[in-house]
Length: 363
Ligand SMILES: N[C@@H](CCC(=O)N[C@@H](CS)C(=O)NCC(=O)O)C(=O)O
Image 1: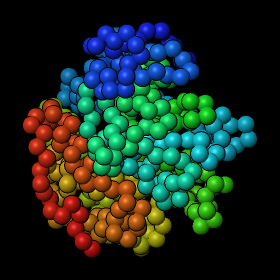
Image 2 (image 1 turned 60 degrees about the vertical axis):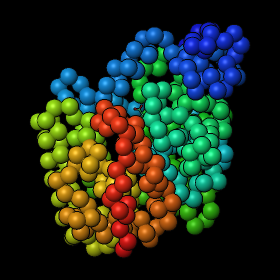
Image 3 (image 1 turned 135 degrees about the vertical axis):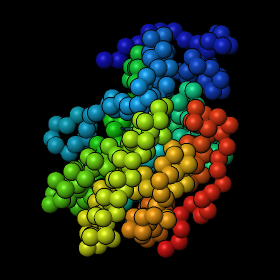
């Protein structure tokens, strides 16, 4: 339930009027007016808890990803709370984030650009979380046209001023009920895949990346790929103990070897032969970041995709160069700058390495 407490204002400037938009860039506690409810701020406990969350690794040196908090579904079932509608939902992403990147790819592959709006946060993830910038300030970024928020966290606090989780992208927002529907990428891609066929051009109707005949195989593969590859790079990179890092980096490379074997035996260019599935989409967003970022920044350097994994390398270049929706949603500048300039615990001076050159090799 939404809990609100009237208050406000800019804690630094102690301004007596509702804070002008630019104050919210400068202060932790400064929010823009919210139309339908009292002005709210997170409680102290929410803020303290957030500070804990930002420590990333626990005492034992392990990074443990917290489960996503908002898990409602858009569904065309009669009577659904969130029915699919054109122009009703808005997707917030970061070009840098591999989880959000999945949703941008599926939105593009399903031809949903005119049905679901898109906002892209700035690549810099600071103390207040993701922020919005204009495209003039940061090419590739957008403002929040729905609420004109300065930071993504304002959307989470609209749902609950005591929200104690992380302020993550992707976020799928319902403009009609003014609520956050879902912030879990694996679920958002299923909704975009399944529920909006009444609103897309004929050529996109029935296109599915989760075909019934392959569901069991896709689910099985997703499970270990999520644990050891998608999240595995983070577990290696955020580890704060040598043995924890080594265990995760070794598991990661075992899984890359396994994927290399699967692609070598595949009868087509994709993981499951000639059918592009969500397993390819979910793997792509990690592998495209691998050589440019994870090798050096997360110390995932037992090998590189371009030099040691010919099958994965071929698969990656096919997706990037031959299917426009992959290239169009891949922004190497946001990717490289985000990790290297936001994670100061790992890279205190925020220097972004120039290489590898090129970001992705030609076919
Ligand atoms: N399980 C979530 C993970 C999303 C996630 O961790 N997003 C990161 C960016 S890669 C984020 O927004 N982090 C911001 C923060 O933790 O402050 C999903 O798949 O949607």
